[in-house]
Image (cartoon, rainbow, N blue to C red; front, side):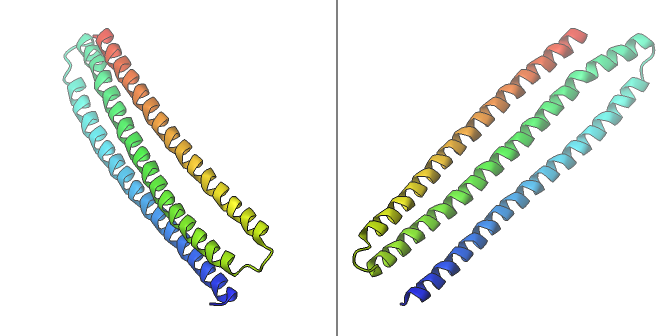
Length: 185
């Protein structure tokens, strides 16, 4: 195979890889949007039902004191619903981030192997005396792969930290909402 054919094949492989990655990422994003739309529809329906039920309770109040008492008891369930919604939304976002990272990682691993294989083929055809240039290219490829591995590791750590912080914040807000609901009673 001539070097022109190899470069052409390498370019075609690269375009196919990019198309594959773009398709995988787009599919993951569409799945995520579907989940968020479903969650939003469920939340809208639940909020509407809760509002109607709350309005019926408030309209059944016999005096202002009962009205205000009923109003105060409505705050805690609404805060808990908001926290549940936030947790579900955070879960969808986290799952999407994990899936996007996996798809990108898989594609990058495949590309890395293809590039290494292609480089090995090219280095076999390199003219005599180009050993230093080949070694330099090999070092550059190894450094790029190491950099990507570090980026992947850092991204995973950031996602885990975000999940931990969101869960802690959700827990604190739920406790605050419960405490607020108890103090209004």
